[in-house]
Length: 337
Image (tube, rainbow, N blue to C red):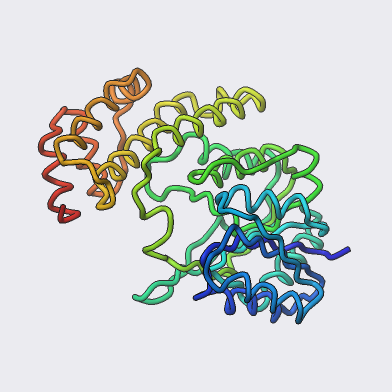
């Protein structure tokens, strides 16, 4: 049985897949297996996956006949993983050569069930490091305060704690004992991390960047989502379930209003995205309707977000003042609609 199972969802990834897989095969830590989940690809990715598996018996390929989304792909990987630990890697990203060795050794030496690291943000403009947490060993209580609570009810003030699952080496035992799964195509990583770290006992963190994250303008987070409101509603349902199951109600009393505001800001950006076929008048009407929803109206009334970036703070002020026409013009100029 391998020490680490690396799970890679693959969808239309022929441009990046060779570098991604080679970043695993060139690891200084070699006790791994690589699970490539072909999520209904129609490009050359399946051929590449088959070639990798033929060249290295540690690489296994699982094909889903049609595209089911990143959550189902990752769940397929979890169902078939044999390693003591789980690492996630996106098909357009790469691991640093010592990533698995460093996380494995940190976890082993500290007696932690989970290890985490900083990462590199990679774009056309260059590469910059982004920290996870200060280096050290975190107890159950410190994990709750440093990760669970920020994911629960601190989704507005900059810097926001990002729900990047690929910054961690997870315990397979914890994942299976708690039956932790992915669901949905957006915000799925935040829920996954919240639930996992409600079950983790000890985390060790290094400030060394071990993962190369490509800031891809074509990723799902930059595209118009027709069903975003339904996705967000389900996200809030799952978040509420976790709050109740793990007694988090008192951890951040205004978590619901904070999360609703965060969702509202994403929804507004999504509504004015270039890919939305609706007219500007229809988009503005949709935003006004959303702001009148009881949950959103309550958040707008009870919580005044502060500490946001300049642009988001402007959007907040326009929404609170019900200046929806000005909001529409702002996005018309910004997105060149």
